Length: 221
Image (cartoon, helix red, strand yellow):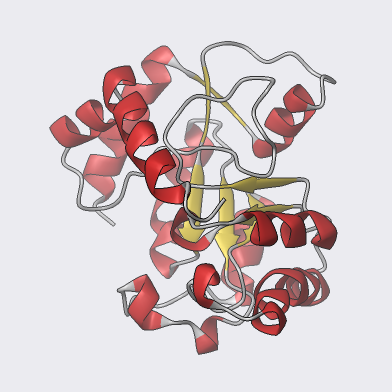
């Protein structure tokens, strides 16, 4: 992770947005809580060890992100991840939760959910939740679709598993009418320069990507 670029991105967001937690967003969607607007939730997928590099900085900024981890990182589908970066250990995860980070599930192995059988999907979504809750002794209320891919069958299983919210990679803005099991996110990764980051989060770019992705997903929904 390029800490310098990440720091610039967060400081830029902090000038215009209120950082809230995923718990606060859940309460907002359930009509239990008002949130300051405009607001943003910071989330990280996969659970790589370099998340530790930003722990102290985010604490200084009073930002409490959500980290989506794999329930069986030792069996991770590295081809789908396209990365050989080391994962956080269980003790590492506890260090983050001690700073107020929320832990969510990013499936069992990060396989392509659209290509799996019913039994395999159950393992990646339902069993993964149970495994994380048992090993971490934490509530696992939130799910992140690997690479943002989902279908109606997958959404139904996420709901059955008892997740309160699930996040996708659909680019658009969240309103009270947004489906809590297909929450859109704006993807930013370590390859983005600061100028690319600013362009990526511009409203016009977000809406254009949302249209493109919605067209692609239409054949699965």
